[in-house]
Length: 547
Image (cartoon, rainbow, N blue to C red; front, top):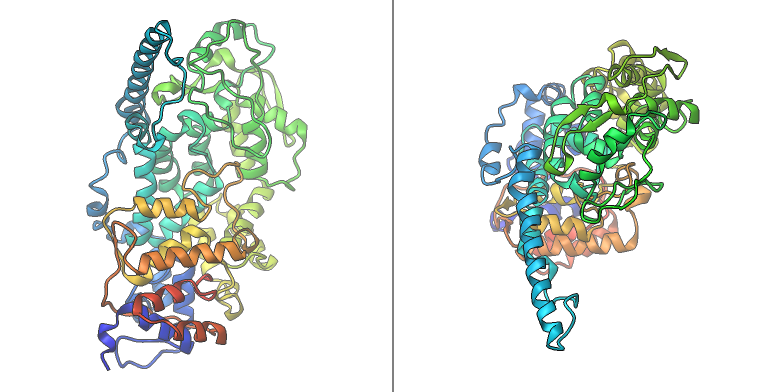
């Protein structure tokens, strides 16, 4: 019948249309195939050809245990996929020195030269120097140079999600970055994000929550994004000494604070003020720490708590932010008075330890245990996770001092996670859709930049979520007619070989899918004229949008 040469496109279409499992061998389907597929859809970015049979042979419990201990999984193959990138191992200061600062200098020199030429032209009666240049900004070499770290960071996110065998670690890295969101479009934050994800997020996703929280709190990316690096005791006579440095390293680049509420902006380094700008207490980080990072909006804190937390973090700043500097505690900016946070008295004179004490308080708070457990259950179980499961996870969080591996173990071993009625109830966001499509087709990625652009087209630009809330993890955010059409277009472009740098093999072991498929989907796929078209229709089907 020639089925082996039709490739994954037609085979996946047949699997969808039949609602059954297409296997690459004659072995009988085992009773746990549905659970194995469910696990692959939730703790990975979707099954690849052969994954279902491997998990069934290994056993679901053993597979989950492996994923909960990524350090035991040989992922050395990832190095060959990442070796070609220039910036992933660099510090923020190295990125600033090699990419950001040279680009700014080149642009400034070009503008100065253009200004001088324009002045000469104006003497001769020509056009003024500030006329827009007929140049495509996307082709600006200085801008391309400055953007390279963010472009490579975005590419590696896709490459890791597709190829890494440490899938749960990648899923959780995505989850926790989104939880502690930082928008790359706010000034220097864009060249701080490589270090932020690599050193503050990734190493702690299965560690203790307090360590993860502390790493993000001291990250220059977070300090800059939520403006805490500028926060100072408004009543301190020491402000006059600190103000010149704050001006000198103001947030240049036109970056805007991307938040639910306006965030005060640092002064532009390219347009220094002639008068002193007012400086003082900034509550942005204090508020988001309580509302988004720990207790949650219903966590029982008050506006007074927000103010007291902000006071505790005064002086947590950045050494030379324009050059990608590191965390520094500045005693001259700190409010060293007594503070009261969530009923806990923080004694006067604590200095940097005031902030650490706040992190201890909120990390061990019962509301934090429940808030974090609810978010994890929403990601891995359903948009409205069962209260009983959240209760058990929160109890484990508290008893284990925020051991995230222990909390995830409770979740993944629970009857609620494994219940048939939660299979395929979660809608994939654009990132999950693109990566699961690449994994399902067995695609080879030689250049991930077109995939990064596809993410922008689908409304989820990587590392560019505007509000500190991060991208939402619920169906209502991603389900609409326009989104489905856009996904269909992306799928068709991918399977037809029109995505540059991405190769979808003509022949590959088929992927197995389980679940009911609507008559409409069956009829639609049956009309396909070619295997690539059949695969595109399968990837674009409502059933494939679920995990």
